Length: 169
Image (cartoon, rainbow, N blue to C red):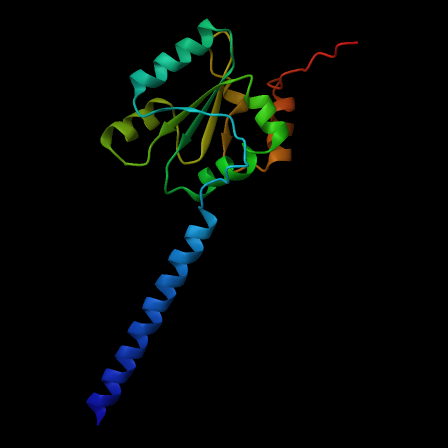
C-alpha cells in the first residue's frame, strides 16, 4: 500500500509540475506576442557582428544622423517590451523616424556576441546607446533596462536627443 501512495504522490507532483510549466509557456507567449499590424514602430536594421555595427554607425555619421543602437535578444522580455510598448508609441516612433535605428541581435549567445558586448561595454540587456552625428557615443545617454514611452521621451529631452519639429508659421 505504501508503494501505491508513493506512486500517487509522485504522479500528482509530476502533473502539477507539468501544469505549471504549461501555464508558464502560455503566459510567456502572451507577454512576448509579436506586435499587432496596427502598431507602427519604425524599422530597425538588424546586425549581429562588430563589423556590421561599425558599418551602420559609419553610415549614420556620414548621413549626419543620430544612431540608436538597441542591444537585444529574442529571449529578453524587457527587450520585447521596448519593441512592443515604447517603440510603437506614436510620439516615440516619430522621434525614432529621425534616427538611424540599429538592433544588435545577441540572441544566440555566440562567443562573437560576448566579444561584441565586451567591446561595447554592454553588461546586460536591454541596453540602448545613442551615437551623435559626429560619430561619437553619447555615453551619458545610455539606457539600461526598460523605459516606458513617457520616460523614454523625457530621456531624449534630458540628453538633447529629441528632434525638434519646426513649425510652419
